[in-house]
Length: 399
Image (cartoon, rainbow, N blue to C red; front, side, top):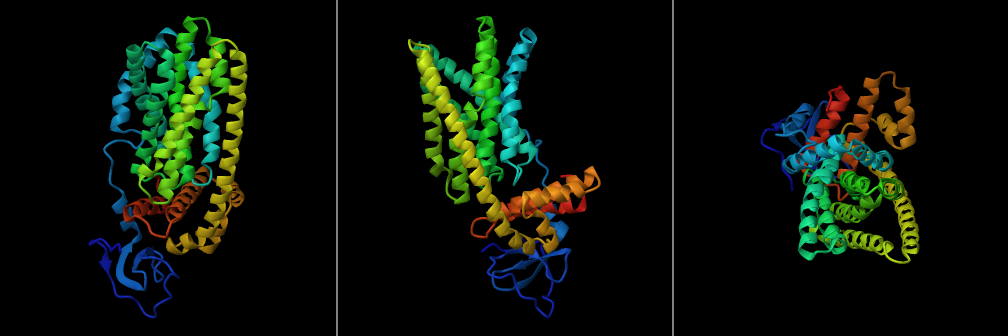
């Protein structure tokens, strides 16, 4: 059982003792005698261990060495990646501009997917940069070496590309698990989408650059940016799905290898189909591949909608427990129970600052609910960090 850290103060339990949380595990809860204090509940009764509300904020506010949208791997990979992008921008700027088009198509879909429990923008940006720089530069080097050794670009496209690209994109999701940003399946899918989008952007720039030299830019742009901008996010979605399931079940990430395997297999099948499309009868193959891709995309959207509905129902079930644990009034909880009510309340707020505070509070509460959506237990440090975000939102402090 988790015990309070030594710095928490002790204070006698006041009398009369109010009823403890019903069937709740040990943890920090809002003190029933004071709205400004947290009190430790040991699973059976209230204890003498208390902490001011801002003490949890102090625990969580450890300044990172880097901004949260950066990491050592991203910085190291950004150096050669940005150099190559600078060359492309200087010599053929339109290919760089066209490479950004998938962001306008895929980005809004990923934001829509992330409505209930929005992930921090800094974390989404880090994942995007990882896909673009880390996965991009490693894949470029490995695929080039493989194609040189085997003497076959087709073999590189079908064998080395799916393997190294999906492994490196998976690293972006694992990094978010390491930062405790992944709470379940939807988070895994969202981060998979941003990693895939980042990789797609950097890869499209390189493809468009080469296609322009061969006077095939229009055909390549339509095929990659208009018809199949979701290709890489859909491949990596298998990995995100498996990792999200493992985190939700509190299992080792090694149990998510099946998702990585499916991502590699689907990627290899896609690249193989495109290679066949260049042979005799390729028009038929291309038509079948595009139809199959559209059907897969529709099935994925249906799956995401069903997951969102399930998560919304689960969130409504967890909200009373979250309200009791973190001093949320019943009236405030009622404002957050559905997206429709949240939108209504948000529109009624008079200023942008009030809307920002409301968004921050709703996001922190949703993430606390997701954190507790297991067996009711929580990692104390992770909980302290989320509670600090909730307190900052309530106090109007920028996070």
